[in-house]
Length: 262
Image (cartoon, rainbow, N blue to C red):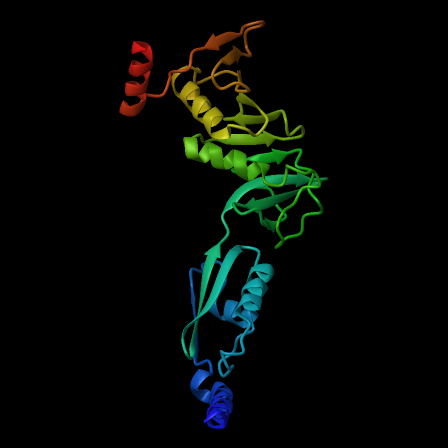
């Protein structure tokens, strides 16, 4: 009986090997979705997958890497088999998010930190002091300085979350003294990258309610609980602008009442 079982297993393995090399798993179609900048035909060609290829032998991860590295404006590619003979390539196109200067050249960077092209787009924030490590179009951007690589993403992400727009530039020459210029006239002194969401929320509230719509202003957000705001058009003018406390939840109010009673 044991020999019979062993022989059966060998025969089954041989059967699967033969089956894997039959037309049952040969690629009959490649579907591409999410692409706007590049044609489906070009993307499919760069994936390396062709009709007639045995899909059990295709390296899908290598196909994804080939697509992303070849096309600058593709941030992500997901290549998968949607049936025994069909392939789907799902594309996530890159979104321009900021510009970065390297020497005398300017580069446009995506939301994920990919170098999209060597160019300048004045509608995007300019990142200053990044100290890039030789940017290459189509590759991910990296800084020579530890802690700077993801700083633009962190700052812009916090600003976006707070609803703060019209960012002109981010100066991160000293990553512990980050400055954000808004509307080309309001300087936000952030200090380091801690509590960025809180700092941006406070900045948004001040710009909406306290800071005039014209003139040059400096906002020191190093301590978001006490924020000096200076009208740069008036010499030696510095005021502590009160920050409106966030509304307490019912649970927090109950705890405060209990503490006061005690």
